[in-house]
Image 1 (cartoon, rainbow, N blue to C red):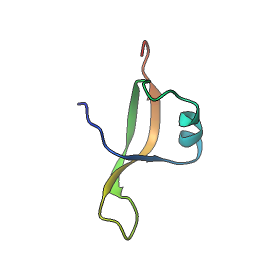
Image 2: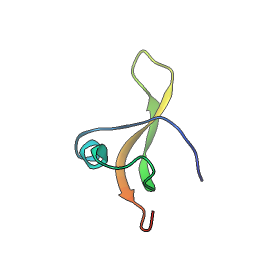
Image 3: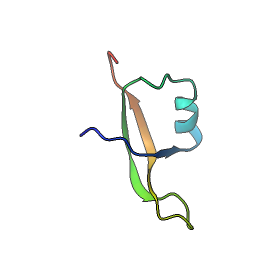
Image 4: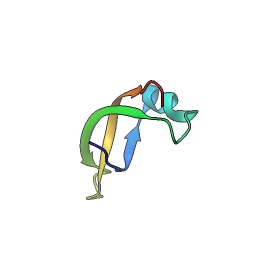
Length: 55
C-alpha cells in the first residue's frame, strides 16, 4: 500500500531519520493514534523504520 500520512518518530527512530533525504524509500511499522490528547487528527507513530534497498 502507498499512502501519505503524517508521522511522528521519537528517540532512536527520530535520530535515524534526521539525516535521511526526503526521497528515500522507507518501510515503517507503528500505530495510528491521535496527534495529541487535544487533537483529533490521526498520525502514524513510528516504532520501527527500515530503509529500502535500491531506493
